[in-house]
Image (cartoon, rainbow, N blue to C red):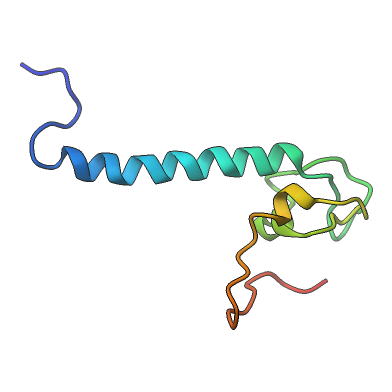
Length: 89
């Protein structure tokens, strides 16, 4: 009996799905760790709060606390003609 989770012809498909998913999780964790801070309702709160911040807050060029969030903003989708899904504050 094989101990491999997936084997056979589907193995490349599983790897093709897991690699981008893992990369996305790592990038999201990095953006959360480097977010300067603030909520729209409490700009003085420190860092990123999973329960109170929006994911869009991670892509803001300036955090709600007024400090630069250049690292997170660098990952923002800037496709021409594509509207932002984040609410304006």
